[in-house]
Image (cartoon, rainbow, N blue to C red; front, side, top):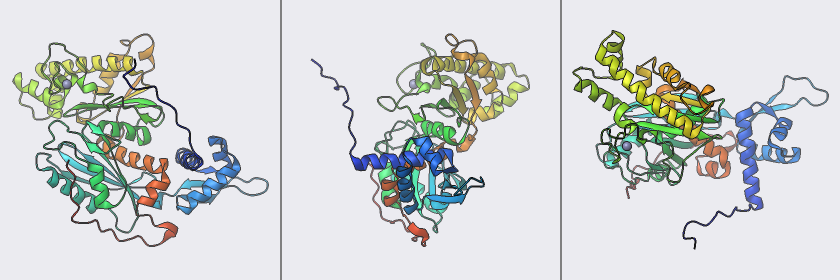
Length: 421
Ligand SMILES: [Zn+2]
């Protein structure tokens, strides 16, 4: 008697889906290997030369490719090299956090063209927050280029498939907000959403410290402690999109009560507010982790002991994470990492030799390369990844301008009703 979920039946694919799949395979290979010739693409993807020719024609019709003559001299025809057309359109990446809205506008190649940073307080009404968010996006969009899509990173938990913000702690009335549907209605382009730490992990994989590793764990240390796990190039989500919630792993079984209901979660011990609260309790007047670091560096014994305890808790959490996930690389990001310049090296040293067997020998623990931009750039990468994954759907829904014609004027509807169910 099996009342659980039946074992999954693999689904066959019909011809149009096979074509769409192949198109996406070619696009992804291009993105990773560009510039590349047609024969190089055939070799890399395992598709026949005839199929590649067909796919390249199709992508050219979407104005997605640039062809340049190769400098290599060969007998017969000189091969042309293909690259993705970075000027195909603009992509927007957003980080919506408890203190700010950060928006990055990039070209289709992921190159940052503009950046806006505005203070944000989620305590105001959801409608007000959405309007403010749309305002910042409108301010940064280049009205003369096609807008291809918008990616957003928000505090978890989220339902990334539906694009819903489920109800982050300390985030005002934001409960079950269908954010991507609202943005899609407002801007008329496809939108995608992910948890901020998972977005940052994806950003580091594409553009940052993880460009050469396909199994990495990104941990953000700031007002909360979040994480994103990349396995085989994809974000690993688990059954409820909660995989990698390292902030809520138990580090101290009798520790302080956490808002998740548990005791002694890592977040209650090493989040920035927890560290500052501990400093105040011990009589230090510091307003930021950077100030605490300055005191510790000047030899203040209390500040030093606070830092040492944070090192102990964090290294224990990292050892647990190494034993759980066996990542090739751990990337540490967030304001705590930027404020304590020796944190990453100290943790790397402490973790060495403390994980099971040989696991810790090769583990690399490094600081985020993208810094404050990690989530917004990750949101750009998420948007581009979705477009590459299904160019037909994404580009027909976007403000596509084919054949190099003039862009349509950008006029988002002013009276889109926010969906806050
Ligand atoms: Zn917790």
